[in-house]
Amino acid sequence: MGKSSSGKDTIYKILREEYAEKLKTIVPYTTRPIREGETEGVEYHFTDEEGFQKLQKEGKVIEVRNYQTIHGLWRYFTVFDESRMSPDADYLMIGTLESYEMTARYIAKGKESGHGTLSRFDLLPILLEVEDGLRLERALSRERKEKEPKYEEMCRRFLADNKDFSEENIKRANITRRFSNENLDTCLDQIRSYLKEAQIF
Image (cartoon, rainbow, N blue to C red; front, side, top):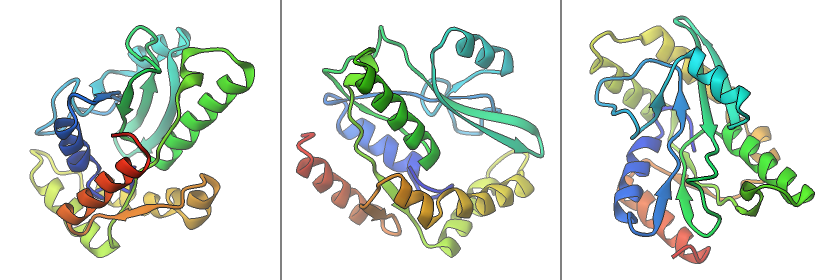
């Protein structure tokens, strides 16, 4: 997890490929339009409001984040599919601090009640950080590659991140370890060591 343009997608893809035999993935869902270079079922499952409401009614939505953008309501959410998720396997997820907290609460609630497959999971947070100036440069570079750049939305996301990833929110989520992603190779080495320390591999 991390602010926009902190390198989440890049690191997620590298770890997914590097540990393909050891890590399964949980692909999040979104109702926002697909971007240039994205593939259905890889970065996200792309759906619409009707699709979200259907999954919500079926009780499959673990957590959801709603964003009022200049293009309308965009939802990002995680779906629990008991037939595909086993507590005997390790999974790689991508998301925000809010999605991490909501998933942690969902799991804790299941543990307290003693019910549900998801209650047998544990979470290991990986919080990426990048200096704001560099992050803004990366965001602008990425947006310029779009067929129809949405600069206003890029700026809205950038400013919203400062609130969403405030020191208070990070502390509340009990996250004590952070990974600077100003140099990709260094960041990846630190994450690999972190996974090893946690006895994931």
